Length: 390
Image 1 (tube, rainbow, N blue to C red):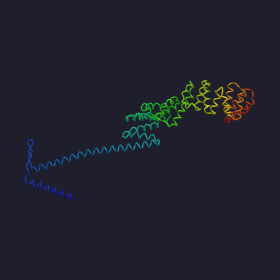
Image 2: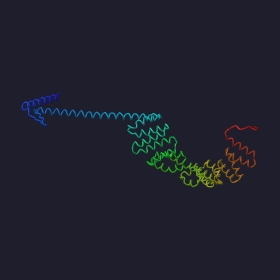
Image 3: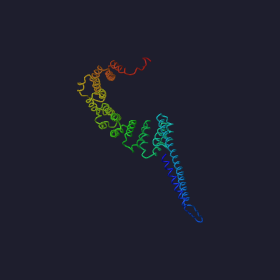
């Protein structure tokens, strides 16, 4: 309040001073322009200048205010549009999570033009189009995603590959991953997807060649990497028909002691007529770890067995079966029968019953052979058979 009074007093004092000056000497101003001449007092001229100045200031403020208002309006419209795009994007992502593909695609694609990150909108709209079965629309949206900014190829390729991977389209997935591989050859996700594709295609050699990169980039947990490594070599050994022994020598040393891999290599060798090469592999595996499965296979491919085995495992029915089969392979009928009879006493195994039964039949012992054959057949499912005379 005091400040207002002081200002009022100062204004009155200044007005009085100016009034005194006006009365004392009004001054004289002459303005001419061509034939036009304007005469007035100094103080009136000053007043006119002040009014003009104030009018110009007011006009400038009005003009600037209108421009600022227009800018604020544009800003408000832009913020409103961006907010609507964000809301549409969030709703689209929610629809995508709820598997409402058509709605998700519509919202995400519609909001992409004004979205903060249009790449995300186009990628997930492409995913929705894929689930709708619209391959052409999906590819168009992927193209829009690539054009949405720089360095988008890896993201587009990965999302595309993930979709194809989910549909088990292994060849198409690998094609999509080729682009990602060019951008980021050591990307862990790219490597994992490639591994799944090779597994799905049964391309075990390709998976074997990929294993070093999987290990180097730690693309898989150690347990999963070990399982993939074991599976790849196992399947590769099982399918080879060219040179199983050379392939076996390429198997990592720590895997050569695994019974399943040894058996796979031995079976492949036997198939190509190289059972003699399979025998030492199986024998070495048995010396490392005694295994019934390996013994059963050994009996079908081997022609001899170390005497120490029988001394160390005199009551092993699997060893006795293997020795019986080796006797059959060497045409030592009495020895074979002795081993098979001994195995049968320890364990009623259909395989032993079958081997001994057909040996007895071949030796002319029809009753004994038929009895053993019937015992072996007991393992078959109880399906109906025709009655005699039918």
